[in-house]
Length: 225
Image (cartoon, rainbow, N blue to C red; front, side, top):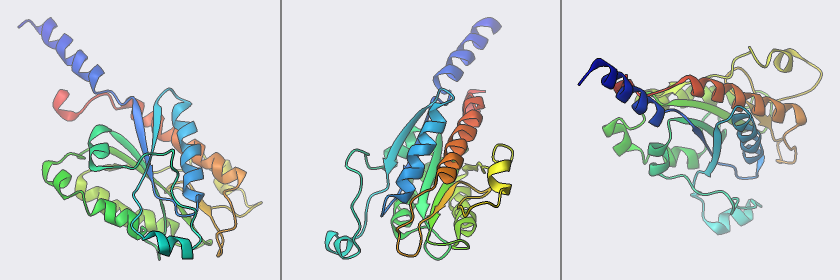
């Protein structure tokens, strides 16, 4: 096979494995994280990639959710599966925090990924994170830091939001807001009554755009180079 033919085949393989879509996988008990996810989707799609929403399956019984006055999951958003993780090269994971860690639903989802870990199915795939807490200092950054351990064991590449595209939003002190360099976020209040603010949704959209811009530069898997 000629050198020109080899180069052509490599180019075809690269085009077939280009990141063209981002999976936005989240768990949202009261809808706060879901609102951030939709803003992130808008940001992803602003640069030409497709943003696909998925929900992490619920683990609590229906009667318990009713007692907690949880509205239930969005029937228009499909549930994420292990196959979902295999089908994408880039992810943004959304979660409420529980004492500085992921909620049980998110943890249960990742505890099912053993076979993917064995096969290295998620190795070198991109991942970012966004979150919701009841209050300031409620553990958003700690949740992201703890989640990185899971990403590291799978060999995934954590992509922080940073300050480059959010400097004015993060350094302004005119209003209370969630989110940080680790990822976008919202503050729900102790009773969950506070909804994501215009500023928080703006930051979430910026995160989607920033993440997608990086994902577009990832042309192929290592074995295709």
